[in-house]
Image 1 (cartoon, rainbow, N blue to C red):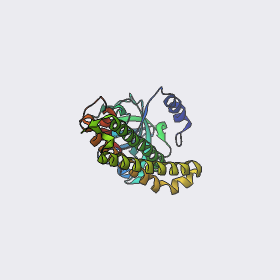
Image 2 (image 1 turned 90 degrees about the vertical axis):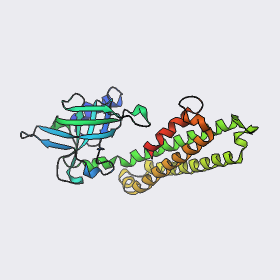
Image 3 (image 1 turned 30 degrees about the horizontal axis):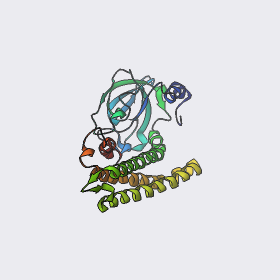
Image 4 (image 1 turned 45 degrees about the vertical axis):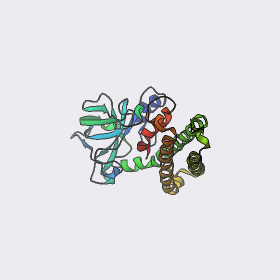
Length: 271
């Protein structure tokens, strides 16, 4: 929607926004995760200039198993960030295949390993300008990190809520768990970290929605990255403490501890 031609926007956006089609972002590779500037998947123009021939692999691609469309980071130029472009690939293109990855958590995400072998892509599927893809990828990073912060702090609050609820009814040594000082301390620490992180999230969110777009991109990249680290570390702490409060119930799927058990599996993805 920010960089695509009218042709691509008409082709993709309405169906994806209405849920008729699914799209995924395919950037990460087996040898290039955070180091986006050094991705290796190649897209070479055919002699007639009508197609890109794409070869490479992508890994940990959310939605990849279900996707009809793939927004793919490819190398069209020299090494480094100035040689990266973005292409739209489509399910059914010969040479494009996906397989589910058996991840520890976040099972519904359809995380996929994507293989591209001589995939023929029309030049009309180029998103934005050739060799300008790195900048396009970076444009969304602030919002992506912000959304992860919002998710993780909510998950941390779930751990806190579940811990309080369970501690109010579980009895050990003749009294409720909540009456044991060590349990009360755990819950207080969880609450302190959750509320502090939530306050920072709301503070930065206010700036995001009131600053002009270009100003927010320039000023908030660092604070949002720190916020993401803060919120995911809060989830990591709260998940561990919730597991301690629930004991064996946090180690079994289903039952009273099902949310705590599930979130314990998902912590690593968010951290």
